[in-house]
Every structure is written in structure tokens, then in C-alpha cells.
Image (cartoon, rainbow, N blue to C red; front, side):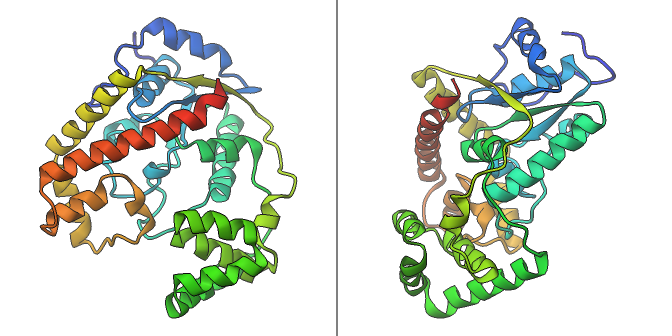
Length: 318
């Protein structure tokens, strides 16, 4: 297709979506209006980036709003398949590279920031398109997560208190204490043993005096835009091959060097950004705990498992 308004055709290593034809992109344009919001989603390696970049080249009004948790963090580029910097500079993207690796981030915060970004885009006469595979973020954007207004100073103080309590008393003690005030969230955290969720639960309680589980049960605030979902589907065997090919491409593109650079900058495994698949495995390689080939195989397995969970989650989108 011919580029418009100075935007060049996508020309980078993310080739998963190259089979999508111009006709498909043109079919998507009809939903990019002020009432309906186009949402392109699908499992990892299904070609979401290529499709949305082709769409943006077809319509210079488009600005891309990411719904991918792994793209939030600065410095985690190769292993998250983040669009190249030249693409980010040419086509407006939102909610990419907005956090340092040690910053926690919730679906509630995503909903607030994504809604603000979308409203701003529309106010400037542009067209937002949401793209990503983090289903919880997409649900939070359109369905909302009930929240109350809390001064930032109180939130920061409560978060520090929660962090200190968990560090001093330990995960198990603070988790057990949570059972009495928020049994539902206690059970969820028990399954995952997720320290970030435990910290968030206590920070919310310290700041508001109300269990986070109860707050979330409040009637959500609906978003004024209607989502039009375009779910990219790929046959399982083909998706598995795409994942393997993409992991090999990332390794060939100096992923291990990127991980080493992060380690040298003081990035530690417990930081929220390290939840992105592959970085812990490459840290193992750098610490001589496993070979690169062993890490490669484990990364492929974990990515396929993640893709399965994504497919299950997004089935409801059509």
C-alpha cells in the first residue's frame, strides 16, 4: 500500500503479520470513528504489531494505544518484541516505555491512563486504536475497575508501609493476616504467591481502610467508547512455529546482551519488569546456572503456555 502523510511502510524484523493483505486493513478502517474503538488483539506472535502498523500507514490520523503489560517498561525491548525506536518516533504510540523496571503497575492504573490517552487523542481530532494481548488490561479499559479518589501522598505512604511490613514480617505472615480482612483476595494470592499483589492489597487497605476485594465489587464506571474487537487467530501448530522463530530471532538480535546490560544497571529479578518472559532465564545463563540452549527451550515453552492462556482469555471477544 502507498504510505500517506509522510509515514513510511513498516520495515523491521517483526514479520509475523506479513501475510495480512491490504484488503484486511481496509476492512478495519470502518470502525475507526468517534463512537467505536478498534481493538486488535490475539495471542503473542499472532501478528498484532504488523497489522496495526499497516493500518497506521493507511490512515495518518491513527495513534496506537498499547494494551501490553510488558511494553510499559523502559529498557526491556528485544525480549518484549517492542516496536523499533524509529517506528515509535514516526507513529504515535501510547503506554510504551512509561515506567522504570522497579515500578509496580495495576490494571486500574492502566485503565485510568489508557482512557486519558484515548480521550486526548480524540480531542485532537485523531483516531485511537488499541492493540495488545493483555486481556485484563483490555477488560479494565472498557469495563472499568471500581476505584475511589485517594491523594497520591497517601498512596505513596501506604505503599511504603506495606513494603516495610512484608519485608520485616515476611510474605507468609502478611498473607495470613490478609485472610481476616479480605478472604477472597487471600485465596487468589495463595494460588499465585504473588508478592506484588500482596503489597497492593495491603497498600490499598492502609490508604482506604477498605479491603481491595470490596472496592473492586463496586459498580464500575463504563467507558464511553464501544469496543470493536478484531481477534487475530493462528492455527496452533503455526503459532508454535512462529513463537520458536521469534525467540530465535530475538536471541540472534542480541537479547542476551540486552539482559546483561540490564543486570549491569542493577536490575534484579524481583522487579515488576522482570515478569516479562525470558529475562529470568537469560539471567540464569549470565550467572552460569543454565546454558543458552536450555534457556531457549524454556523460553519457548513458557511463551507457548502464555499464548494458550491468552487464547482462552480472548475467546470472549469473538
